[in-house]
Length: 384
Image (tube, rainbow, N blue to C red; front, side):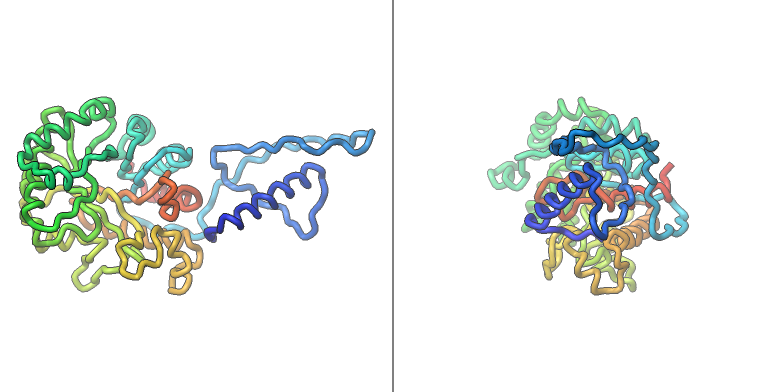
């Protein structure tokens, strides 16, 4: 099981690794050292320059080169159980900086949904490698809805037109995107502001439809909006019903993914909250398709605040009856969530946060061993 290391530990390990590599180059055995099993390729190679000069005038005989053995294919420590329906899990990608994301998780795993920020040109490659994967696009912007309405904006048709015009060139240049999000995780202190947001999203749907694009509306954070504000957002849901698109929600929980889940009602206050909303608040005629465009472990939604991303909860998971292997402990939670999503046909899929995350999201990072395990899980439950 991998554990997060301090900067000092990382530097010590780096120094030890360099010394070991130099000793290997000189064929100097190290006491008590066993032969290591080759690790799975990351797509990169590191080269150590020859910095040790000859110490004898007679060169040692060169050993006969051995044929290189193929790198072993990673095999799960456990067997994935049979799954009746294909997985609805996918990934949210901030940057495609690691080849594992495109070459392994997407090309081999064929996830149901991928959400991308910034690197929108990757949408075309995703469609080539995994044609059935649904792509959600989000454009990073300093264009906050709260700022607009605080400054006095009330004409939501004009505001939507301005919003669409700002990004129209990028929409047209990235036709591999299936659904476009608008603002990220808006939160409103009263129904009046939510009403303006509902009007804006409805207008954005209409205007984007005129250009041939579909929208994912809402993009609400975990546990939001409050039930009493949903009525004011119905205009956006009616527009989705008329023109097509989806409702975008985020579902995080901590310290485990099922925290806040109520087995008696089969819904939750954080994960699976969409069920409670559809059962108690939104009428059946407005049950539009749902995209969970961010999901996973996030300590920021927990009152205990043990940590942030899933890697910060490994120590906690070791104290409760979860698999002692951290990757499997998280995978078991993701499988539970996936199996619940399978029960609801109106849910298109969920993207796990995050692959290729920015530096301050390192504790959420899926790339690496977790990404490999997720890939094998997706391959065992193919979308097709």
